[in-house]
Structures are given as structure tokens and as C-alpha cells.
Length: 288
Ligand code: NAD
Image 1 (cartoon, helix red, strand yellow):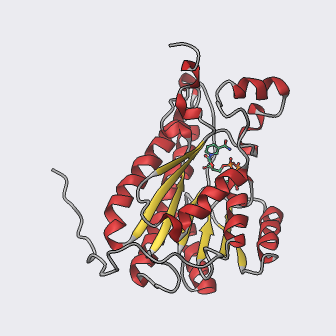
Image 2: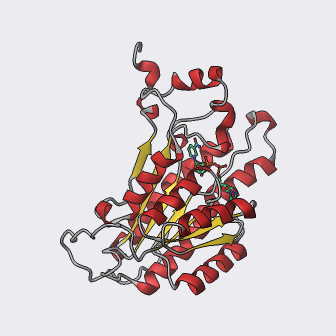
């Protein structure tokens, strides 16, 4: 029988639905987006800035791209900083949070987005390919979420900022649900993200910390260029997408802004699929 760890006291926050904030919806909030100098993370970081948040842009390689994102966010009239850290390295994550807290004072929103693929047929997959994907995609989310929760618990709710004590958005994938031959390490990591997100959401909801996930379908980013960069590949991809177009990073960014804001205050432990219907078993549209 597993033992249940001691829990901090349940919050004494209001028990009714909150008054919604005036726009911009994230004014005064401090956000950290991991893997934010490319693709989805980049779009999310810029959108959080446009919604009024100060944003820390985490990245591991690509100083120039990170500085570019910082510049775009600052142009919206909010603060932005670049924080270089490998999310799979505990000491690096702790140092990143220490710097974020020094610069911004606290954190209100974590978007745990950093992720990668190391694809291989299963019988040829190396331990290095397996470990790299699990370490970044799953352990990275654990380390970043743990540090965020510690700060949320220390600070509690600041009603003038948000009616919750903090928000975590775990970037997952439709492959938390859809098995993916040739990508066993990636699908395993995203299946892990789903239960990490749900278990954490259950554990910290009494402290009014909201943890949710986003499961993107096929989004046009560098992680999956070969799936959309030729007409043949794009047409093949569209057989999997009932809505008939590839997703853009901004499709995910808009979902992230909503999940980070008090507009989604009663949304707890949910995965929002932003996938053009990819999880609707499109192969059954004409058969089955
Ligand atoms: P991307 O390759 O453009 O971006 C990935 C980001 O993660 C980059 O900034 C990269 O530098 C960063 N990163 C990688 N390893 C890191 C580490 N150790 N520490 C810190 N940062 C690190 O790809 P993307 O499509 O924008 O992917 C973002 C997230 O969305 C990933 O978690 C991915 O699994 C997920 N996702 C993407 C798609 C898609 O179709 N593009 C679909 C489902 C899920």
C-alpha cells in the first residue's frame, strides 16, 4: 500500500466563481515558458506577453533566437528575459528558477513545453535515444513543475493578480492517446506527461493551483518538418486531420493564454486537444 505524502493546508480562498479580470487577461502575471525560442513555445511566449504577462524565455541552444523572442515580447510593453537551461538537469532548473525569482519576484504561470524526438524502429532504439526523450519530455516537466509548485505554495493567492495560486500547462501531444510506431520513446513520454499532469492537478487543486495539459495535433514547427514540407507529405498528413489544415503555433498559443487566465478558472486536470480532430479516428469517417 503506497503511503500518501503530507499535504499543505487547504487554502481558505473564496468558494464561489471569481470576478473575471479586465483585459489584458494576464496583466501583472509572471510566466515561464520552456523551449521558447522555437515553434510552439515561441508562439506561446509571445502570446502570453501580448496578454500582459512578463515572460521568461527558456531555451537550451540558440541564443540569437531567444533574444529575438525576448525583443518581440518587450515590444508589447511588458518585461522579458532569456533563461538558458537544460530542463532535464536538476541543478540547471533550480538555477533558472533562482534567476527568474530574482528578476521577476515570483512565478504565476509555467508552460512546460520543451520537448524533442529521437525516432527509431523499436528494435534499433538505443538507450541514449530512449533516455534523452524521457529525460527532456517527462523528467524536464517534473523538475520545472516541482519548482513552480514550491513557489506557488510559498506565495499563495494574490487576489489582485489571479484568483488561483498558480497555473501549470503541460505541453503534451495527441500521442498521449494515439500509439505511434517508430516513436515508442516519444509516445511513452507523452503518456507519462498525461498522468503526471493529472496526478499533480489532483494533489495541488486544494491549494488552488491549476494544472492542465494541451495536446497538439500536427503543428507546423521544426520538430516535424518532414510531415508538411512537401505537397505529398502535406496531403498524406491531411488524411489524418478532419479539419483539413495543419495547425499553426498560434493555434496552441491562444489555447495556452486561455488556460493561463482566470477565464478557465474551473478547468482543472484537463487536457485540451488542439488537433483539428486528429483524435476523432478519421479512418472511420468512411468505413469501420
Ligand atoms: P521545436 O523543436 O520547434 O521546439 C522545441 C523546443 O524545446 C526548442 O526551443 C528546443 O530548443 C527546446 N528544448 C529541447 N530540449 C531542451 C532542453 N533539454 N531544455 C530546454 N529546452 C529544450 O518543436 P515544437 O513543435 O515547438 O515542440 C514544442 C512542444 O510541443 C514539445 O513538447 C512537443 O513534443 C510538443 N508537440 C508538438 C507537436 C507538433 O506538431 N509540432 C505536436 C504535439 C506536441
